[in-house]
Amino acid sequence: MSDFTDAPDIAAPDPLFDLAPVALAVEDFSAIYLLLQSWRAAGVSDIEAYLTQRPEGINEYFSRSKVLKVNQRMLDLYGAKDVQAMNNPFYQGPRLSLAVGSAVCEKAGELYRAFRGADDAMRASKRAHYAAPTTDRRNA
Image 1 (spheres, rainbow, N blue to C red):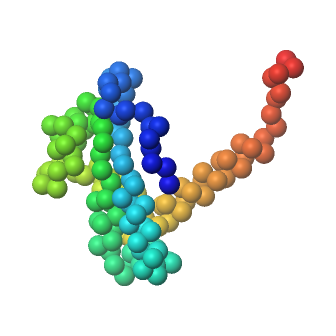
Image 2: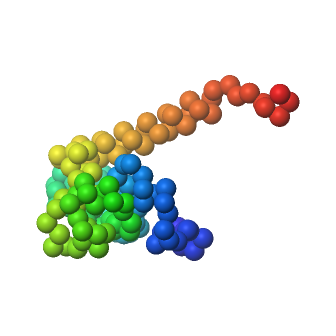
């Protein structure tokens, strides 16, 4: 796992990000990775069955992400004063990750199928891309 020492400074002003006409956010999902690793270490091999038996795991999963940076459009969309408000456990507005998760699913099984479907779609897209004939532009 990368330690992100070569990652750009997200606190630095970025006009393309800040003034984008769409809502944008940068989130840290490393705690979700650690949660999934702890579930695996505890013997969870079927995440769908695990979350069906223990639905509070969905909230645990989504509560682990941390919003690092948002643009003004995102603040307006969520009615938050600043990015710190979106990470505050007492924030009364919708959580960014929970809102994304609830849009994807209503039950644990649907969450699993949504993630699996996204993975399958990405793999199929990559396979199609690499299988497509390419033009060698070096000799053009």
